[in-house]
Amino acid sequence: QVQLVESGGGLVQPGGSLRLSCASSGSIATIDAMGWYHQAPGKQRELVVTITADGRTNYADSVKGRFTVSSDNFKRTLSLQMNSLRSEDTGVYYCYATTFARNIYWGQGSQVTVSS
Image 1: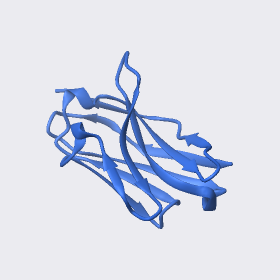
Image 2: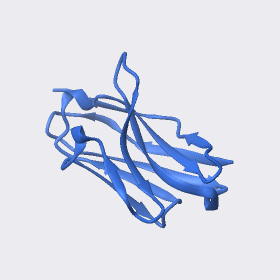
Image 3: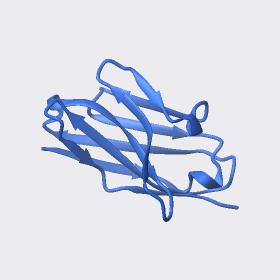
């Protein structure tokens, strides 16, 4: 089992920045990738970014150049720096982790609201 606890998020004006964090615990040695999903109001959850254990990243086109994923002691703390935020970035952001056994675990979700 892997537990993920998110922090960060909030209200920001368009063009502003926010930082999300995700702290993992439990069987973290089994994690092979982590990342973030975004669920806009009334829409399905969509992948924002994935980072693998060997450091490879894959960003959604909509966030390239604006969002940056980083890890501090991979598998323990994952962060998402979000710059140049737009109204369409509004929604709930979920940290996730997948394991070598193909299980997926989710954080509790962090609300991000971009509005003037």
